[in-house]
Length: 487
Image 1 (cartoon, one colour):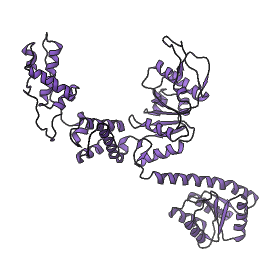
Image 2 (cartoon, rainbow, N blue to C red; image 1 turned 180 degrees about the vertical axis):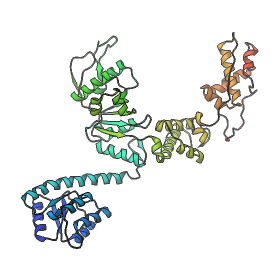
Image 3 (cartoon, rainbow, N blue to C red; image 1 turned 180 degrees about the horizontal axis):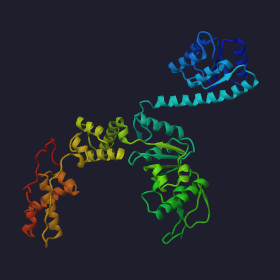
Image 4 (cartoon, rainbow, N blue to C red; image 1 turned 135 degrees about the vertical axis):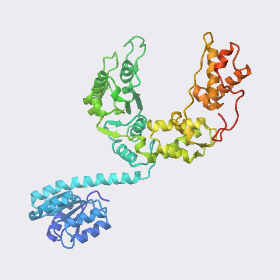
């Protein structure tokens, strides 16, 4: 469709023809409809970016035409042409969605104003059309770069990424821990013109102040004790690409000042260095903090915030996009089953019901870890609710357990007593006991076999052995209540 396609709807032939001549000279593609009904027929049959509609027309006036277009979902921008006596009606039309209005008579001044209005209306139409096309493309989309989700909130995230990825604007990603902020940063990079350049991620909360400054800006040889070689910082390493600063609000304030200067000058000076090094980077930052509180408390400098947050992007927590949870869970299950060489058919109904109903305070990261743990520990082909549920939520509390170690006992005696007592408390469930002790199943089985072979209590006195009361006399191989063998 030509970008400048315009329909003139006016029953006054002289005015319509004059307008068409003026606009055609400006290289617009212009057609005429003799009244409102004819204009509606043309707009239904074909696409126009702008319609110039006379407010007073036979069969269908300009206001009625505008309302018909809206009811039919026709997105053409409408500029109303009206006489002075009908200005109130023109204002009503604008309140109903018209782009603007022009008063008659169409003298040189009014035509000048119309010539200025039309490019703006065309631009608005073009932008909205692109957004509508993108929304249509994203409808039902389950994956976008490394992100997964088909909820409305995630489609909104995809749209923002698509809109800003090709720009040079800095982006600040907001969201709780575990929502996938680095994946958004990577998507912004991969969709940008910098995709062939480096993507460098730095967690500002994970490093002490001195190390963080060194990681950001690098150092020259001899800058401090032990610096025998020069080292480029993150700014230099990300040059030509994207630098992702995670948890930026955790950065010490004095380093924030240096960061702000680097962003403003697009250059850095290494620790111990004298020269400025030019860098070409795009900054994407992220934080899980309450921004208003961080600014009020002085944890994040206001001038740095405005530099980083040219575009703000909020990543919703998992509890606010419940419809995405089964999609994510099944994707993680397939991924970890393949990585661990296991044939797993899926989750049982109770497991899926629990997964969807749980609040996931740790967000996508917690769900991912829960599914990975279930896959690693699974001995069957279907993941049950008990296997995917974190231990502290299973509703079964372990009986209080204590082990008394007499003075004079060795560390080996104490370990033996703890292992045997723990195993006894689980009624011989090898996998459960191993989980409680932080051991692999096979390691615990070998240790238990050794103790049993030596009589359980060992040779250093029966007092220690007595502490492990209730010890089964052999490793149990019976079926567990859920039908699985002990791990």
